[in-house]
Length: 421
Image (cartoon, rainbow, N blue to C red):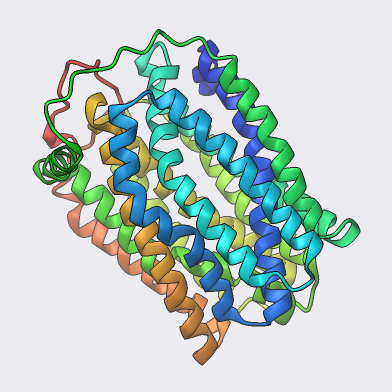
């Protein structure tokens, strides 16, 4: 294995951050799996699965722009530390709710909404802080790929562990273990050695800075194109993951372990994709790689939809997850390479706004459609939609200039022609 694919770990601060986030995200995926399982087990409603996702993402959409401004105006490190403490408190309350009440669906949804608000401030600060954790800015694209490896490794392990824990210990144990995992990330943040924060003079109010962020995206078509395509995919394709409990219980006639393995297959495909992206040479045309992987995503999803054999279905799910994670991670790579450091919080918050608006709406749409026509036709349709979106990339490829994913210093603007002309 080429150790250069892990070069971002040469940076001490990023290394501590990476280790803490790995343990925390393991707990996060356990909690996500447990929430989906408990909601479906208690309601038997595909629509309520969509509601549970909507409850987490919609508050993030409402407050994400404010979160981006907060990230750019204030000390991102302290903002992130606060959001992690609040996330731990949310997990503890969720543990108590599920432990003390047998039918706690609405409590789960309410606390999911609380987590959505926290995430609106957490995600812009966390993503923007990565830039400060990497001393050699040429390692930043690799750090993005390493984040994807971390996300997918924990997604691979978390649902499988959650399935076992639900059966052996109960759902409350998953939520409690997630609360405990925040000790690791808070400890890693306290161990960071960052330069003393110097507050910058502000000539604009919050509304003025929000407007500046939107104007920057508008004036940089490359960034606008990436965010738009992510939004379309989030509405029409990504919500297929919400239907995994239905596949586990109704299609494959399984249990929580079956569900955990389906979710784990998503994580395995994403992990392989992240390792692949971390090994890419700087000269690779990321736009072409993104386009090809969108086709892989759609083909894998379409093949998975009606496959009756569980083992083969897992293989197709891994294939689809590979394409899904590759196109998502490459999009974030392009954003990180294109945006100015001073605009990071706001650009990320606009991305979060689009994603967290599109995905819950798509979740409600997919939940309603699958309730009406069935889960398998719905997933097949999502696969075909992914293939159509891939054709949009083909159509626009001639207008895309491949960019090497290098990162300028804080004073150097990024050429606007780096991606979409």
